[in-house]
Length: 342
Image (cartoon, rainbow, N blue to C red; front, side, top):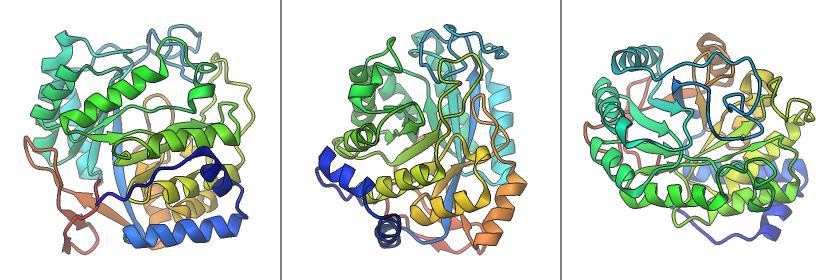
């Protein structure tokens, strides 16, 4: 079920400017209307090619433009990917996300990517990829292989974007998202806070996402992880209340989207994470490491879920299909129909 409305920046800014508890109350009402309270979708992320990226994203340690002492890694092959996917499934993840430090996908790698999708889905996990610019024919091939989601973040507002990235245009990102949509793959797209952006930029990002022909099925909200050697290492820390507001406004503007509390979570205490869940976050990355940054351990996440009375939401996947799935609760094995685009 999709719920859409056209948003403008003034409307979004007015949400950001609401008194904190009024904003939380509104976001909680929206969340309860479209999702089961206390359920969280969990994904595991694997980098299959790390570092030496031609892009100049100022926040990213994988860029070849900066000296970050990152340990560059060549392309991982299929057996290692499937072993990591099996481990993620055994740990309780329901979606396996594959990332590569590429500006764009090369056609020579398409066969491997198709094999990865097929193999991971055979394990029973949903599949997601984040591989850079995607051409229409490449999107169609991945859809045919059964890819469920493709991630391509907008990062920030159109106006602020070129202060962050110069090697890929905002329109390039929008074009990739449209290619994904037309291929029938679900869209995962969000952004980053802590780049030096204004409230208006945060509002502008969410307006762009909410006003897509179809709002993203998943919206990752990342908090800048500052890495020495990148131009943003000395940026100011993000105020936790700013992060919570970002989550809440995202929930209100995209009521049926999963809102993922993404990078930067290791820097958050349990109380901040709890309020983010209260504000509408209902998805996380699970596992000790994201692409290059650290993440809370599975055990610490499970302890937090127990404290909050939260349950892990499980999605099954169908081989060679990227459409709607059944949802299962890991805790009680009761089956429920999935009526919300995931």
